[in-house]
Image (cartoon, rainbow, N blue to C red):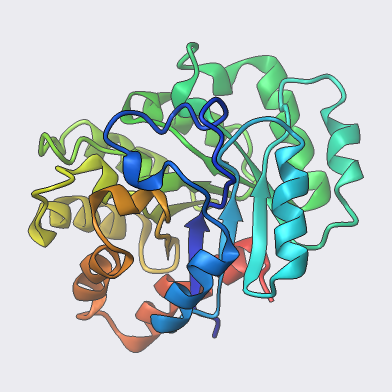
Length: 277
């Protein structure tokens, strides 16, 4: 079974395009490319990764797919298209030749319209994904989870995965509200969850492993061991510690689980969801 980091990014740093890398994120305001990540993955026994978009011009897909073609350890790519566009079906069709393109993501967390996912034109775009066997990564903040329940219910045959456990307020130690909303979304069997991006929602300099347990307990109990997957969110995670420190949080937590459950979390579920080889 493949061991997969199901969520990471590459970029050639552009202060305009990566404007979201704000004050305090100096450590990652530079280029991050395959040669930076591959030795880290190998050190920790990973076979490969899923490369996820971090900027929203469509030509970014060319950059990501070119890297994936040149590096075998990049097992899949999650790109971006304008899901609000009338011609989104034609755009999706144009990507069919790219076997490593597995799905798409839209940066809903930053949308002024917090219910953007429920707009008819957005739902029209989502409705086209299944025609090409594309997945969809849901990137949101907790205030959007209520809309997400209605959103995923509208597409029972579309594979969804929630990124970064919907970014709960870990630094403030707030669990209620987010917990109930995650449990509601998890009732839909076609929705999975990436256990990723947690350290950046915590106190970057002072987090402890136990800070994450209430959130891990919630997600694992709600989704079960077959609908969760590991993602590092590298290099964004580096603002709050090393790859090894971040990985150690989930390694410790899942050490009490069976070998099969650990293998599913650390790769098997991601390989099945994205169709990785």
